[in-house]
Length: 121
Image (cartoon, rainbow, N blue to C red; front, side, top):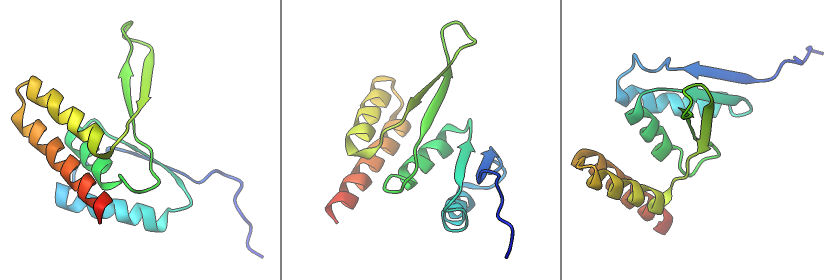
């Protein structure tokens, strides 16, 4: 009988995908979900576009997304869960419009449309 490990099944990836172009990053998510389904996966990144793509891609899957920030004192970490779905993406699109970032607004508007369409199908 093979020995079972008493160690936790934890996989931490700290921006290891940054060297891949965007088209090759998304299949890695499928690999993680398929081969590491019973593991806790922590995927860290500073790349905002990649973070947003993962958020959209994992919308209907059993993943949680958090944003980490430094508090006002510059030392205390603050984390907050991210929500997705059409309403979240539309509110972000509106904020990007207020900030005069049409590209960001368009990306979020598209994500809202896709999330809404997935809910209808």
